[in-house]
Amino acid sequence: MSDPFTLRRLAQALALLTVTATPAFAESGGRAIVIPGRPGVPIIINGRDASYATIEGDWGLESGNHVQPTIYGSRPVVYPEVGHYYPGSNRLPGYGRLEVEPPPDRKLPKPAESFHQSWEVESRPPQPAPPTPMIEPQVLIAPPFNEPPRPGPRPYR
Image 1 (cartoon, rainbow, N blue to C red):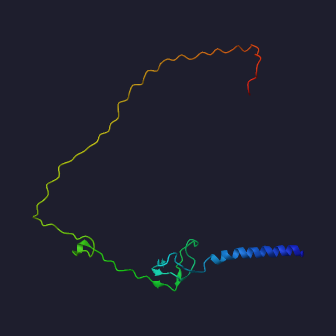
Image 2 (image 1 turned 45 degrees about the vertical axis):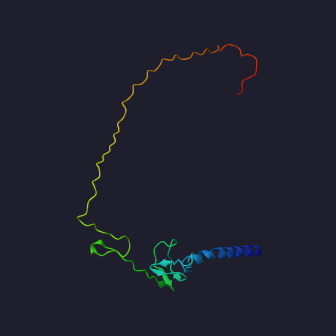
């Protein structure tokens, strides 16, 4: 171990391990500053505007469980009041179409003519099978096995 070359290699390996492992440890947990991706679009976390705020706590996809984040420098979001229309309250809606009830003694339109349409589906009856023609097999006449081979080019193998 007293060899200077070995000590230099060990120091280089330790320095490389330190430089490459430091960003991984820095990303786990700690503080994060929230910067919106689009100007004017707030980042809302648990009912608070977290734009340009500091968030502390291990949460998100890297966490195995849900931990409530601590948000520093945020402000509560004020939601606008939305009017609701409940037909049971006999109040007219503040927006939308105006419902007008026609008088009961009005002239009614003539009733529509009756209409009926139906479809039926059934299978075709099975067709008889055509008769199978009797085809005689072809007869091949093979040369005898004891005949000597003819001179000429040999077949490719």
